[in-house]
Length: 386
Image (tube, rainbow, N blue to C red; front, side, top):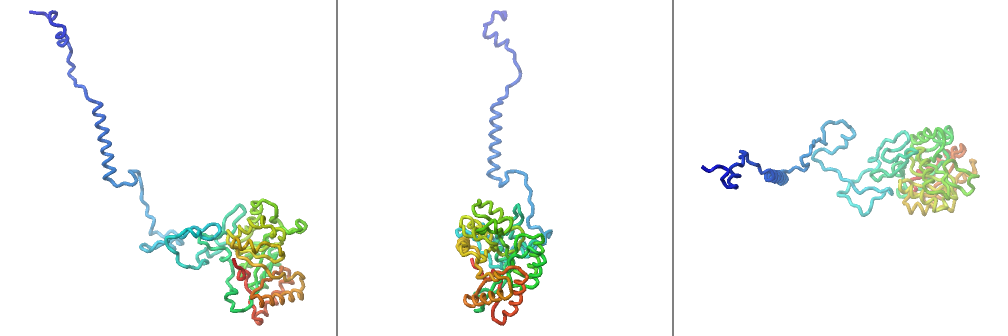
């Protein structure tokens, strides 16, 4: 019998190799198959399932709630099923819509005063017509394009609606510096007389508030550099020639924040400043961008106000006369007679007068006889055009 030692070498190795009893798994093939299956599942979900959030957690909140937690918002909400409002083109700083912009739907005509906030705050500002600055609130054009000039102007007849009657605007300047004198003037003067307040005085808010309560139209006096400055000084924060525009704008904003509810500005002095287009131009541009008017007191023939106002679409006019250059009753009455003649000849005229007691008393007496003469006193805004 042959032993194992006599067997061929190859056969011996095969015989002596141990059998493990286990089968090796194809791991690489299984991993490839798993990845392919996962990709197939993702592809089928993208194709068959409509889920714009991609499986991200989300929550739905009802916008149109039936709970009336805000009375103002509830009163202006669009009822279900009604037509939604559309907005027109954005109103730029100049207050005029971009002619190239179009809206999806024309908004219906409405009263601009009614659409603005109708109740002024304690400073006389309407909420939609103010911009907050480091100095306080200053006027701006509202979101609906409504301007402070239109919002704060006293309703009145105009040259187009006066049926041929001569119109006269009287503007009393220098108010607010003395509370007692200002309150007396407000009490004596007819409500169609326009009042201009200097941006000074410790009780300015009270004086302006009283004028507003009596229905007077209000202007803000802005101090501008005269030729003999500083010997003749219109007051703190005077706008000066030769300064950087941003410095003058800071002064302008500070002055404009002193009170609210005014239709525009009137110069206090300023013969040098108003003759400089480089310095006066940025100020007039700012008034146009904020929807304010400008009334020139007529004291300087070199003023560039007419040209700058037209270029910036600022409601503007120029006073015809200073009525109390000689502050006595007889000279003032003579100046008023001349103003009446101008109004009859031109259709309208504007007179400037200071808040001196004799000037206020004379104006109050003169105004009582105007109805018999067929002359109408109107606020200054009624005679201003952009």
